[in-house]
Amino acid sequence: MTTRAERTVPTMAYDYPSQTDAHRVPQALRAPFEARTWREFGYALVNLPMGIIGFVWTVTMLSVSAGLLVTFIGLPLLVFTLLGCRAIGRTERARARALLWLEVDEPGPARTKGKGFLARVGAQLGSGVNWRHVMYALLHFPWGIVSFSVSVSLFTYGWGLLTYPLWQWVFPAYTDMKGLQIYGDGGDGGWQLHTPADLLLSVVVGALVVLAWPWVIRAMAHVDRMLVAGLLGPSRLDDRLTELESDRGVVFDTAAADLRRIERDLHDGAQARLVALAMDLGLAKEKLLEDPRAGAAMVEEAHGEVKIALQELRDLARGIHPAILTDRGLGPALSAVAARCTVPVTVTVELPARPVPAIEGIAYFTVSELLQNVSKHSGASRAAVDVWQVEDRLLLHVSDNGRGGADLAAGSGLAGLAERLDSVDGVLAVDSPAGGPTRITAELPWRA
Image 1 (spheres, rainbow, N blue to C red):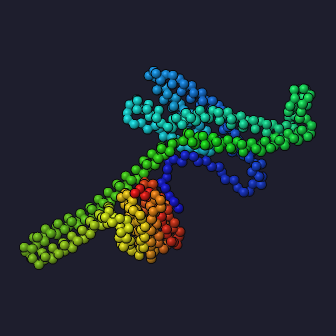
Image 2: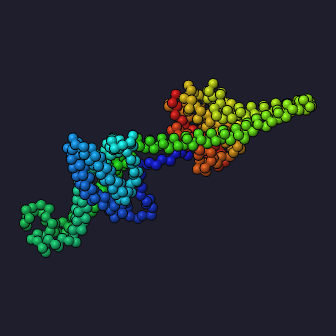
Image 3: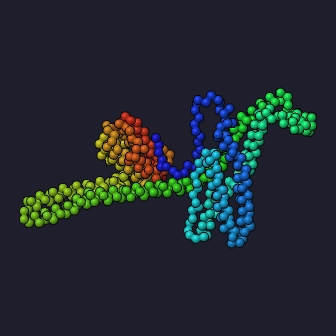
């Protein structure tokens, strides 16, 4: 299972309820009567009036704005035009959501750099999202004419010919013709559909058109989906900015949590031990004058406390950034981590060069945390760490023969690790079936 942090932005998604296999009527015969066909047909019918509204608004207002650019109201009027196109786009997204079952995220507002009226105007004029809404209004009008004309023509001729035997009597009853005239001058000449063979032919042709009508409607609806999703949704730049803002929040939260952990470890560990050591040395200093032997014993005990405090400080410094990683690189650093694991670990590092320090540090702490999970939770008797480069990606693979059952969705430390990797465009993949083995692969950008 591969995970990435959730994004607010799927740009385009649509789905329909699954059809069961219990239908006895073939899909081709059901299509003209399905709700999807009629909803998409309704969308095509509304395309024309909406296209006219958008086109008239855009062309008229752009022309007036361009003509008034020499005055002080030209730019504000142009901004008002763009905002009107955004409003039309909002209506089109709602229409597509209701009739096409298409979900398109609302594009973000124009990003203003600076303050004041001119900054806001410049932001609106420089917004690619606004101009894509303008392009949609200009393109949707001719497409609305095509989709409306084709859908109405197929519907009218198809259902009209299919039901022609039911209303053929209108011609001899109210006109001088025997039936619907295919060609001729309106008199008795030409081909008029009135014989049994003519009626049968009209039913056959009408049925063929009716059966083809839903698929033409669906093909045109797909074009509508592409127009709405491609022009009325958030831009890739907006998506990337949203992603970076989310990742920045994860990085800040992680850094804050690390600082709190370091502060807690210092306060509860080395600091408390050093305070106690200072008190013991003070007592030993007084004791040396009264009872040198007891004072020497107290100094010896304080010496042991100093060693413990130094080890705690070394462990804390290793948790911040180990010196071996800076001096010798990822291979020796991971070997040192593996040596502290409670199960035998085989480490294989094959890298042509060292990645940037930030990626190297994330790789180190990723493997370190995964090996801690192996020690604490896996029940494994052996583990392996493999590190290699593929093109512009750094890959880390940690496996063990333990009990398995590791799950990203369980809210464990793996989920937090996945978020850290995602903050630098990394990916965490977990394969851990119940009963084992567990195989976890982390992928990071190389950025050498």
